[in-house]
Length: 100
Image (cartoon, rainbow, N blue to C red):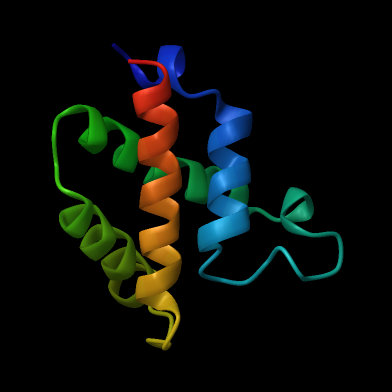
C-alpha cells in the first residue's frame, strides 16, 4: 500500500507541524503555511510513513527524525528533540495502522 492511500497529505502535515516542527515555524508570523519548509517537512514525514509501512521500529524512526533535525538541518540539539520525534512517529504509526 502506498502512503497516499493510507495517510492523506493534510493529515501528515497536521501531525508534522503539531508534533515535530524542528525549526519552530508554526509559531512564527503566518505560521508554517507561509513557510518554504512545508515541502521539506513533507519529504521527511513521507519517508517515515514509508519506513513504517516497511516495518521499521519506532526507535529507528525517532533516530531518523532527530538526525534530520540535528545533522541535516543543522539545528542545535534540544531537550525536546527526542520527545517531539517520538510523538510524531507515534501519531504517524496510528494513522498508518488505521488504514491497514
